[in-house]
Length: 151
Image (cartoon, rainbow, N blue to C red):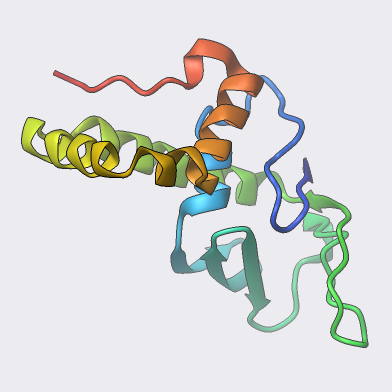
């Protein structure tokens, strides 16, 4: 079982050495939807920036120890410590790796367009949640969090 301390709308504030160097950029920026099946757990995974929604299909496996992320009876979701099965954390890790791999494959033309767009309005980037997520990953993981292009 993995332990995740993440407040909706905030960056991941603690990380283990085994966590992915792109974790904040994934949690803060990525959008995804997937159907996940592991042993007896089957669920729909919907990922928005700052928020993950998991809808179980049928009854969840109690041995997998999903805890801390239930929606309260009044429909409220409060910040908490979340306990999630290791297989789900592995899934998140793999999604982070997929994004890193994609970004490493950007062509010179793609990078030029990105840099030109940022150069036209640098304040937009400096005020962005992307910048905050990058800085948090660098704070948690140091220079390892920098993504170099594959050549």
